[in-house]
Length: 250
Ligand code: BEZ
Image 1 (cartoon, rainbow, N blue to C red):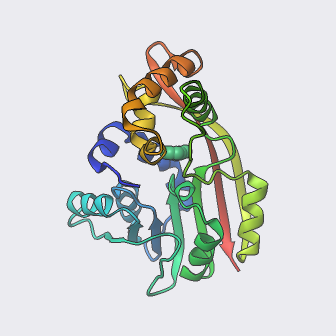
Image 2: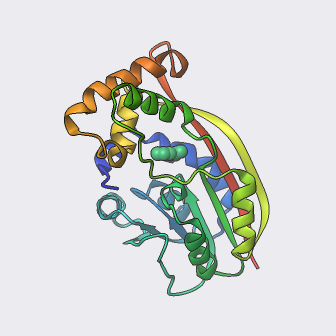
């Protein structure tokens, strides 16, 4: 995925804002080492470091990491480009944190194996990602618009598991699941943004499967199809469904 880190920060800052309650769940302490997996532009990593913990952020996207380094120079947080499916940690860490990133990693068993290997025994994995039926209305809108225009089935790049599926994977990877929450969190888009803007920001790989000349007509139709259910008084909402969990490495 090729991210536009500037638009991500300016119009999609809600990603970090909604991640803040996750820091309470993480409960970082000054003597701890913490890895932020899929840190994006680094805002939450730096907030976690504000508690005194030693924090390292990794993200598969080089532009995100360039922005994180520039934005948070002098914060004491280190940032590196690394893929969640293959990363290694030089030293075992006390905790791994991840907000709104794991659903981009489509081989979850490989990711969980890497997280388990990065944690010390008894280390804690605290994460939130899209769960089953996440953005179902946005996907349905695109699917319907594409079918109407004879463009075929959208190719989606996400892993949105049910709680049962993901708990099973965590256990098989060597974790004890201590908390698993699954809840709706309709999420307001930035003022003026519509479903089409959400797809432009988060779905370029899906749109790339359709002819470029068809994109604008397709997205205009998505807006028509989902407007009634996803917008209220001029504000548009993404139908986010969250899977939040805490798991301990055994
Ligand atoms: C999410 O946070 O649920 C999400 C964000 C972008 C694309 C897909 C899901």
